[in-house]
Each structure stands twice: as structure tokens, then as C-alpha cells.
Length: 238
Image (cartoon, rainbow, N blue to C red):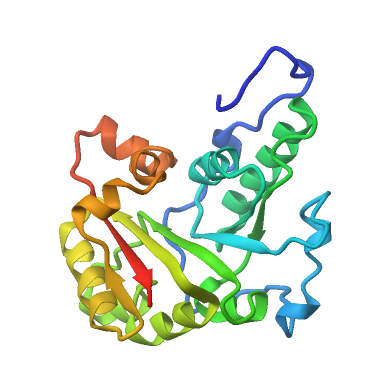
């Protein structure tokens, strides 16, 4: 387990994913029951981050799954706040319970990460103000293979304008998938948007997160076990 040291409380058990299993896909267009702020300034982030102070959330992991990369992100940037956004009920419950257990096992740590259940395709501007975010992550998103469902994809021209709004100039979008067609789709649409430019291979390799993007998430580890391909791209907000 990430970040385990000799000081943890052995009585605190980490949640087991087998008790939080849920179907892999969720219809982002369907009506779900969510509580969300009407405006970003009405978000009560102090409920999620014990020592938030005057800081704002700067990283958002969209569709964070079981939280593997979110935990890695919190360890890599201990002084910055990261939020995982997950639409599936049981999966988001698991991440919340995981973070709670990690905080209990490692006093003073993991207080910079949190998870909320929400639909980022609909409510992202309700949580973040203009240019608030430094990084947005889309790791192994649902490919929605059928052409009729391409409008459900988390990367599309309309949503890219929202991402450009919440990302600060110089901020980054990170994408990873094991589906070549989806990789090409995402790259095409992001590169066509006037607010984004793809980093070169050498520039991407200089990013501190590049070695962590492919395998930190549970989905990435699954692809590795199955010897699947992985495709990564990083884009800068102009």
C-alpha cells in the first residue's frame, strides 16, 4: 500500500474493493441524484479537507475510479489539494472510505486529497471558478465505442471549452487510455481547440507525473497485467 510507514495504526483496516463492486459503465446523460453547489464560491471544501486554510483545489481527477492515482497525486504534491470526481456510487464510497482509513493510519497525511460523487460532465463549473485549476486528469475514461454514444465521451468540443474555463493559462490536461481509437479521438479534438496545445514527447517526459500516469490507477494496473497497450498525451492550456 502506498506510503505505508511504521507509525500507522494497525487496527485501522483499509476498505476492500470486493465489497464495493459496481458495473464498469454509467450513463453520464441519465438523471442521477446529486447534491452540488449552485456556484463555486458556495462549495464547502472545508468539509473535505481538514486543514484547507486559504488554499483552493488545484487538481481534479475526473472519473477517479478506485482512487489509486488520486492517492499518488496527493503523495507527489503534499501541499496542494486534489479532488477525485466519480459518478458511480459504490466506487466513490470506496475512495472516500479509503482516504478516511489512510488518514487514520497516517496522522497528518492524505489530508490534501478527497473524493466527491458527481457528474463532471454536467457540474464541473459549479465547483471551480475561472482559471482555478492547474491540472485536469482523464485516465482510462469510458470509450463509449458506439458512434451514437460518442457524445457521452468526456472529451468533446463542448466540454473542452468548460475545461479551458476552469484551467489557468499554463495548466495541463492529462489523458491516458488503452484504446487507440479513443486516444486519437481525444488528441484530435483537444488539438483542434484554440485553447490547447499538445506537448511534444520530450516535453511530456519532463513532467514529474509522466512515470506515474500509466500504472498508478487500478485500471492502469489491470491493463499492465493483461499486457495491453497504453496511450498518453499531455496538453497545455494556452
